[in-house]
Image (cartoon, rainbow, N blue to C red; front, side, top):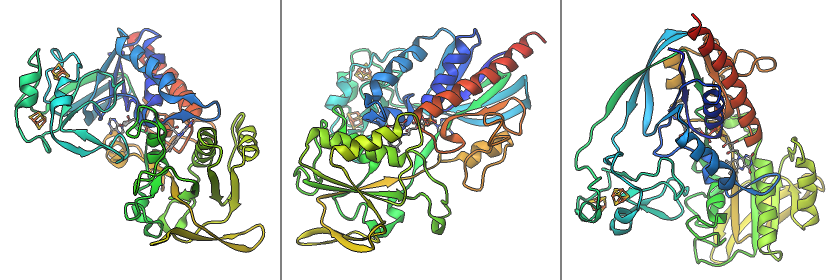
Length: 426
Ligand SMILES: Cc1cc2nc3c(=O)[nH]c(=O)nc-3n(C[C@H](O)[C@H](O)[C@H](O)COP(=O)(O)OP(=O)(O)OC[C@H]3O[C@@H](n4cnc5c(N)ncnc54)[C@H](O)[C@@H]3O)c2cc1C
Ligand code: SF4
Ligand code: SF4
C-alpha cells in the first residue's frame, strides 16, 4: 500500500504523477491511448506566450517515462475499483497492442512499409495513418501499435521487423493495483461539430474545427504547417472563425463557457497573421473572454495586427459554385453583413471525456448536470470528490486552460500524497 493511481495522462495527470513521485511515492499512470500527453500533444502553440506546445510537454513526458517511481500503463482503462481510502484495489484492463514491448525499439520501419492508410484520429481527421502506427513522432512510450481492425495481414511488417516484435495474436490482460488514493485526470472531448449541421462540417471541405486547424498549423502535422484549403490545396486569403460552437448553447444542453476557445481563436489568428500578414481574419463572437494573466494584452495585440472582431453569430454556412458565404448581424451596429471566406474555422467547445459516466459510476462519485466530474465544492475544494481518497483535476471537472490544469494537477497530487503517507505510517 502507499501507492497512488492516476487515471488519464494528459498534462494534468502528468503533473500529478510527477509531483507525487518526486515526493517518494510510487505512481501508476493509467492512459487509454497508446501514448501519454493528451490534447496538449495535438496543439501547435500555446497562448498567451506562443510557446511550442510539444516543446513544453515532451520533456515532461520523457521525465515521466524515466522516473523510477512511475509505471506507465498505456492502452489501459480502469475496469473495477473496490475498497476505500488507504486500501483501494484497482483492476486495470490492458488492450492488446500486438507488439512485444520488450523488443520494439520504435524504429518505425514497419510503419513505412505498411500499405494500409486509414483515418488519423490524432490529426483530427486531416491526413492518414497506417494500420501499424505511432500516434506521433514523440510518442511515449516509443512503441508502435497495430490496429487489427484495418490490418490486412499482408505480412510486410513482420518481414521488416529486425527484433521480431510484432505479434500475430495478442489478448487483453487484467492487472490489479493496490493504492491508497486515486487521482482522476481523464480530461475532455471536443464538441462534435457535425451536430451543428448548419455549419457544414464534414459536408463542406473548407469548414474545419479549431483542433483540425491546430494540426494544420503544426510543422510536424499532416500538412507540414501549411495552411491550405482541403478542397483545392490553395492558401486561404480570408478566414472566418465562428466562436461558441457547442458552448453557451442551451438548445444542446451545453450552457457553459468552454473557457479556452476565445483565447485559442485569438492565438491562431495571431499566428495566421504572422505567417501571412495579408490574410483577412475575422472572428465572429458573442463576447470575448480573455480572463487570464496577459490574456487581455494578447487580445489587444491581435487587434493591432489587423485581426477583425465581429460581434454576432452567423446562422449558417452556405456554399455554391462561387464559394462559401455566411450572413451575420453585427450586434454593435445592427448591420447585416455577408462574408465570403475561403476557410471557416469552428471554435468547438470542450465537453466531458468519453465514458466519464462509467468512471464516475465505478468510483461511486457524482457527475455535474453537464457530465463533468463533480468536486466537493466549486469554490473552496475543487479537487476532492465526495469519495474520500479520490481526487479530480484538470479538465475532468470543467473546461480549463493548461496553466489551470497544471495547477489543479499539483493540488490533487498533494492531497493524494498525504493519504499515501498516512497509509504508510498506519
Ligand atoms: C483547439 C484547442 C486549442 C487549445 N489551445 C490552448 C492553448 O493554446 N493554451 C492553453 O492553455 N490551453 C489550450 N487548450 C486547452 C488545453 O487543451 C487543455 O487545457 C489541456 O489539454 C487539458 O489537459 P487535461 O490533462 O486536463 O486533459 P486531456 O489533455 O484531455 O488529457 C486527458 C487524458 O486522459 C485520457 N483518458 C480519458 N479517459 C480515460 C480513461 N477512462 N482511462 C484512461 N485514460 C483516459 C485521455 O486519453 C487523455 O490522454 C486548447 C484546447 C483546444 C480544444
Ligand atoms: S515493431 Fe519492429 S519495425 Fe516496428 S517500430 Fe518496433 S522494432 Fe521497429
Ligand atoms: S500486416 Fe497489417 S500492419 Fe503489417 S504491413 Fe500488412 S497491413 Fe500493415
